[in-house]
Image (cartoon, rainbow, N blue to C red; front, side, top):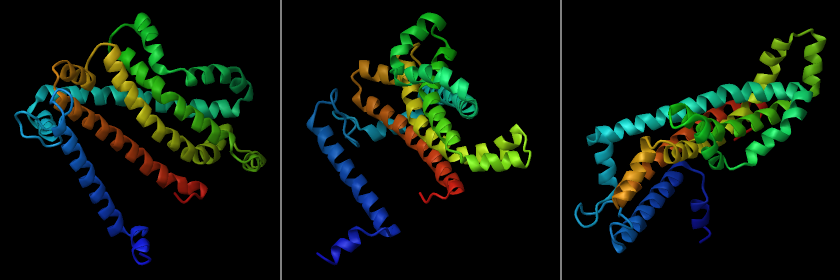
Length: 269
């Protein structure tokens, strides 16, 4: 037992990969067993037999490689996510730094921003619907609102945590405001902003699906609704796997950038 514990607690690559493989195989086995235990309209197994119990993975393969309409829905969802997320990214980071630099602006707007941040964004969808309608841009606004506030708050906290000594040294060398931004604020704030971006990527994905549900049905949200109305549980789970894969990919990319640029402030992550 004393020899086995150091092995399972090891951080070696081979141990890590063995653990991942074992976890995935065990999860797949449990999914398959549970899927076969229920009716196909309630639960679908992972592999299935194609007749009485259609499998989730065969359905996923059919969606991605044989169904052009589904691929088009996937592209529409990615476009919606990308548009809303990029707009939130481009606006939240500079706005957060500006709020940190201008104390009066921060005090004036902090209560409003906090109120919007704690408000469930799904509750605002009927309000957005009544004003802007069902087109593409109202859905972009929903994604934007889901992603904006995590990026803003992390950027604001990062900019406010800049050491005053750094700003004093910059002023003593007569640095311009742009020079302070370029040489101090942006490099120091970037790791915090990247943490917000990683958090916002998952929230923006939720906003994307919510917008496609509650506004005009389109994209992967429409595929989910169609499959559930047809009692096609394999189709529902296959679409959920696609959305999960998108979420993991977005968060991994953001996490990689966060880990890379966190070294700027001496963090070992």
